[in-house]
Amino acid sequence: MTIAIQELTPFQEVNLFLDDSAERLGLADGLRQMLRQPWRELKVQVPVRMDNGRVEVFTGYRVQHNGARGPYKGGVRYHLQADADEVRALASLMTWKNALVDVPFGGAKGSVQCDPSQLSESELNRLTRRYTLNIEHLLAPNRDIPAPDMGTNAQTMAWMMDAYGQIHGHCPAIVTGKPVEMGGSLGREAATGRGVALILQEAAIDLNIDLDAIRIVIQGHGNVGSWAAQILYDSGCSIIALSDVGGGIHNPKGLDLSQIAQNKAAGISLSEYPHGERVTNAELLELDCDVLIPAAIDNVINTDNAPRIKARLIAEAANHPVTFGADQILNDRGITILPDILVNAGGVTVSYFEWTQNLQEFRWEEERVNEELRKVMSKAYRAVHEKVVSEGINYRQAAFDIGVGRVARAVNLRGFV
Ligand code: NAD
Image 1 (cartoon, rainbow, N blue to C red):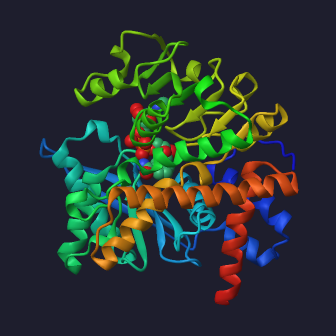
Image 2 (tube, protein in one colour; image 1 turned 90 degrees about the vertical axis):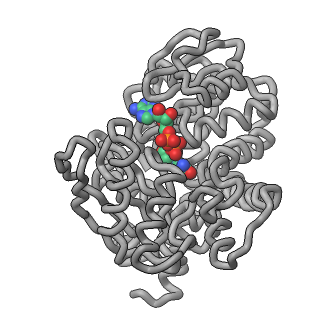
């Protein structure tokens, strides 16, 4: 399918991937319309008393995209750009991702439009509690279960759990990605990055790539990027460039990830790493490398820079880092893209393990978590790869076809329509 694409919103773009899949699957028109729209969305005011005594009013969202396969599940993002359209796009991706890795969840996403780096710890605590109270009537362990995303973390989930618990009583299964001390799962913090590494390792075999001999570039050094970088580095890969919001560092001979991790723990910024050249985030994406892993924000690879991307393989650790138009350009150029709904599904997979542990009031050993994660990611990758080979479609198309097909079957079985 070739479409002239300019100025589309993230949700329109995700729906183009859906339409492409619905066409191949031959879905009925009414069903397509259902899958294109969120089931329910809520916009809330989030007033916060700031440390200086003034009241600031933020906007929050919770979008429940599709619940045919189980309770709504998806992260909460604190970011200025996370408006209704972006949250819809991310909620839709969660629906297809959860179906692809076959965890029993529907898709959702939430946000508060704020810059968390400009808020103090106590302001973030108050903002999180107010947001939770304002969306609380949509949540329950068998209805909708939030998790961390960009700008939020385990501490945010502890505040959400506490705010929800003040109304409903102790309820760890209401959020995942919590601190381990609060019922979080061992292995959850590293899970998304670990999943990225697992998918890359699986794909390397099929694509005839020797991971020990290649150069990897990673954009983003937050939860996902830092764990993916560390796990790949520990397994012998060379990471030649890494960035955060302030820019990146590049050394074609490879970065010393142990030193970078130590610096991060000591609060020393990436830009102060002495053994590399500084690059902007835009330059980083176009570096000469074999594998590019965008692990920060959406839309970073677009029709402007797609013709200049030099990597032969892109593993989408972030959600929707490649626009629909860039996807077409990269496919035409023969660059393989491993899609977000496969690559970053490790987080929600271990969130599922966390939720089941909470419901059973039982705790798994970290080895068990990691082994079960490996099995789920490997099975999902194999299913996608087999479709790529048997149907001659690309990895994103195969992943969407599996996810969309499963959701469509669940909708029909429930007799929604
Ligand atoms: P995070 O907040 O922990 O880290 C984000 C990183 O991106 C930071 O290093 C930040 O400095 C950098 N960044 C922010 N704005 C940037 C910009 N404009 N340009 C370049 N870098 C920028 O977030 P995260 O949890 O690591 O999430 C990263 C991506 O992975 C998001 O797309 C998120 O939706 C996706 N994801 C996260 C999880 C999870 O478990 N955390 C799961 C699935 C997908």
